[in-house]
Image (cartoon, rainbow over all chains, first blue to last red; front, side, top):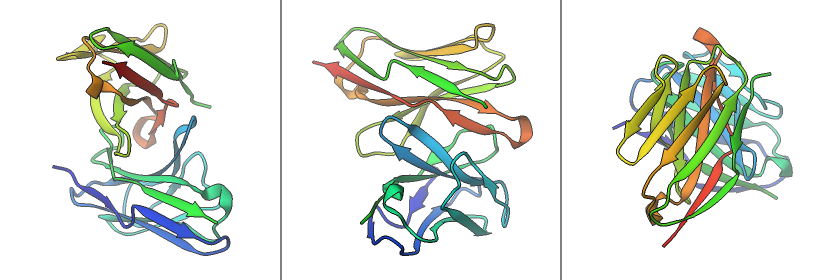
Length: 112
Length: 113
């Protein structure tokens, strides 16, 4: 079974703090993704990575950065958290770009 | 840009009835169309998918149909049960070898016992 884990289920941060969300997959997948999920807006792609040290912007990259130093780990960074970044963040991985994406359990982030 | 429209946004059915969720996509080159189910408080999970060389695919009570000419695809759930209650997302794969999935906004399905 594919296992995708995220470092926190719930996180509360203050405006202006630097926030790290970490995702780990154990299936040697090449591709990893970060999505943001908001009611009525579905899943929106923030960043993705097709290989170690490689990153590409998704649809809503503003205010976020990512890091992929190891194949199994993909981190999402909020350099200076703002209240409009309060959301559910979902990580996913896939074996190939057009393949099934396996999601992590999500991190619900509240920025006060 | 690429877009996936999903309808309806909410759907309420009686147990035992059928449910249909429809999605349209904009890029005729899209070739992969998965459906994900997200139960309350859980992660999205793939329930069925279809590729562009196939018109229909079934798996027990769920089926997906694809009309490439009209650029739409649909999820059909027959004999609905309360455990089918969830948010369902369709998606379409865009962009060839460097592409990505574009998700619809989701349909909240409620099955009333």
